[in-house]
Image 1 (cartoon, rainbow, N blue to C red):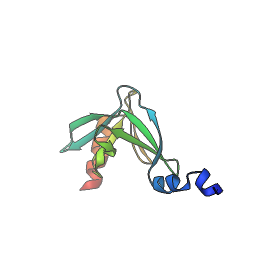
Image 2: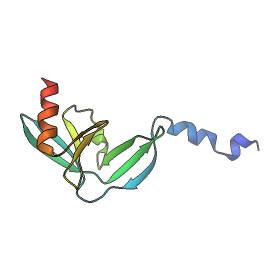
Image 3: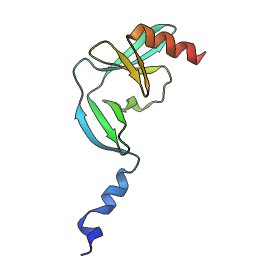
Image 4: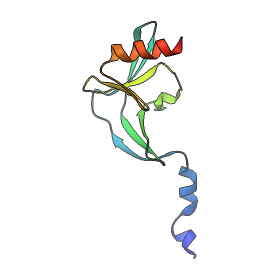
Amino acid sequence: MNSRDASNADDIEMTRGGIIATHPAQAGTFIVYASDLEVLERDPVILWGVEEHGRAVPITMNGPWDDIADANSFVLHPTGDCSRYERNWADAAQAVADLLAVAK
């Protein structure tokens, strides 16, 4: 057996670009979807995933980022502040207004 076999290197290759670890999300964390200056839907975040390069990814029962790339979605944290990738807002109203203004 060589060191590659012993280290399960093939398993590591399968995770490249994917989630390599998860952590429970705090209750009250949601992915929010907005349209026409209102919140349309809130899906609970159950886990935080960590991608290979260290970026945190919210995970719902439907998968990471709820399996969509919706430009009008963001994370609502239990503290009331919101985020999406490198963007942050003080509350959901600011997040919705900002995201919908950019989408126009």
